Image (spheres, rainbow, N blue to C red):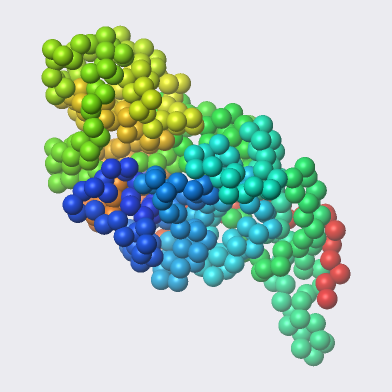
Length: 476
């Protein structure tokens, strides 16, 4: 396969005020002004566009967590998307909304407006979690919030109603017949008359239709109901990282799920998140990674290793190599749960593949930190492991090879890059890794399309038809 015909990666860039890593903000070189300075968002958008990346993204949060580094403040993503769109031309904007708390008519107005102002560069990340920390339900008391059992029904209703609203106007609705006195072309809009258990929406939308025929929906979730929703109503799956072997299995399973519904599995993209730690050499990168990990205290380490492995660390230094003391073949499927106890940030929903710790050690931990992994390294890495997200540690060539291998082995269609802190890692990825990907023929050198759906390759994947059979207008 030639460089011109090789499958291309899709790459997004996350925009968080202090970066993604919970402790990297403590580095001397880290800039944490993103919590209060909107220029950080435009800076990230310009970096992404310089690298020809597909989109920028920051997850929304409706809870109040003033003591949580990641959730002290979260910019409203519709506003920051519009703000950044004004200073960019090609990069897209992935907007996060929560169907358990928000209304499809309001969101349809917002996303249609952003898509028009950005000329076709908007996408949605529809989430529906109601069990998150920070008590979002306490900020929406009196609202009709679904239960854990009914949130999936509400999410489907939300998505279908939203897409029907977005399709309730023809793009060429302006007739502009001055002589005849008709501004709007007759029959160019339709009521949707949507009725469900949670939403009743007449329509049509009172904002111009989006530039994109279908706004891409990027979905995240690991439950069976969530996977079914994504297969039916999403265009991209933001997947946990399971390692190479686990990633291949999950990739194939979800592509088969898409095909079983009569959809084109090639048009559906699977994109896990990675946090890159890039140095001039792999050793330099690992030293930086360990510097950040070292902010995690290890006072619980002796009790943790006693609990998980029966090791007595009163006689063993925490800097001893793990492989000298622990036989990985004896590691149980969920041994590391005992290692971290209640210290773990792997809360509900942050799954590894079948909680298979032996596979995770082999495919994720060792490639990240090397065979000289110490007891302290393993403890910190496991405690800090967030949302089953891969930390990829190495020089630019290693990152490029890692991405190429995972693409060719069909473990992913792209990645969403979560810089551990600002500023520096995003620039290094764009300026050092992206050129190597372009040289290998697996990433674009120019944007292929004027729209985000066109660049993602989802433009022809229409999920919810315009409601042409529903109540048609008497357009005035």
